[in-house]
Image (cartoon, rainbow, N blue to C red; front, side, top):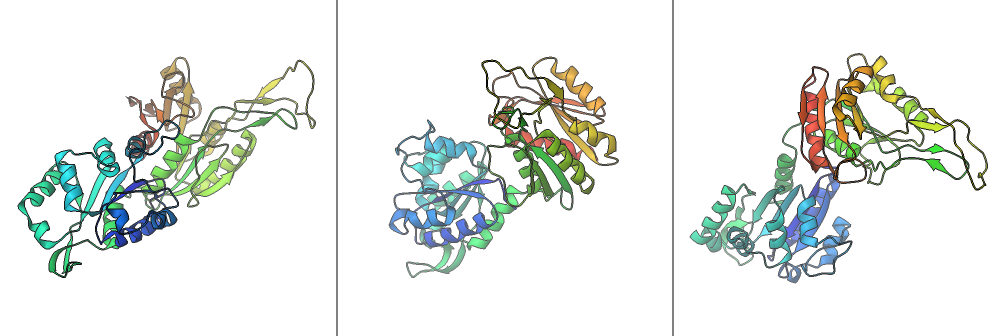
Amino acid sequence: MLTGKNIVLGVSGGIACYKACDIVSRLVKLGANVDVIMTNNATKFITTKTFESLSHRSVVTDPFQPVKDFEIGHISLAKKADMIIIAPATANIIGKIACGIADDMLSTTIMASTNSIKLIAPAMNTGMYNNQIFTSNLNKLIEYGYHVSEPISGRLACGDVGVGKMQEPEHIVAKAVELLLPNQDLYGKKVLVTCGGTEESIDAVRVITNHSSGKMGMSIANECMSRGAKITLVCGNVTVDISDRFNVIKVKSTDEMHAAVMASYADNDYIIMAAAPSDYKPLNVSSKKIKGQFLTLQLVKNVDIAKSVGEVKDNRKLIIFSAETDDLIVNARLKLSSKNADMVVANDVSKDGAGFNVDTNIVTIIDNKGNESSYDKMLKKQVAKIIVDSMIKLD
């Protein structure tokens, strides 16, 4: 359900830390990628090893830990997070956020996050919860767009009885799912997505391929699944993780991808051709490694997978991609018509931040009714939302 969703769970210091373990377990079981940030006080209640065992990821506690791959920890987590959950959220961390204080890894990450959904689960003594200063801080966060999983009444760790007990993990996770998946407009639909690059053999050792990483296709598949669709993924060479919740068909060559798509398309409502199959292949393939100072290859045109689908798609919707370096819109419109597609996603791969093997894209979407919309550079998972929204409007 949450496959492809990146969730940061912030754990601040309180006895309710033990409930956060159950939250991590439930989110992981739903397919989410969960990164845990613990405050120093939280580590006094529970060890980092517990969360690492549940999330299968390193727990972050120190904003000054060594930088890896030139990624500053709080910035990279803030950028990739679809949601930040703080559970338990103490009066201290809520006060910090409300006042713009960023003096530890958790508060710094929250400060750096501009696009993620924020969900907080307060947990504290009744007197603290009812204090007008805390109430003012909490209301300020609500005004800023934060969501709250309200605490419940019960016996507290201090022995008092009253409101302030952290909401149960199943309710917090249910609230997270509700916020992350606001609609299920593809429920009951089946979607075939191709992604990645194909490779064509030259000899027993060498191949022709391209720079495709599969990031765009995988983002689209994840977006469709989050909206309730069942996904068949015809997958070439990719550098991204593949969810085991997809029906995955692995292929290598363009001919193999063509065969897989033609065998599967009829069972689907939408066919999204996000892969980058090789346009050409060697006319002759050597069964042995070719040796010599010079090598001349004679290439022949490969089968056009999108056109093959367009010829037989019937009432199914066909979405294609047009990666170009020149005359972007002209070429995209020609492909839309010649392949009998319903929508084309065009991008100029010569632009910085667009095209292959990067996390962003710059696209123009054109449908078969002549509608055209262009978008500035954004993350591919954001582009995927726009593509799927446009695809649904085709019906």
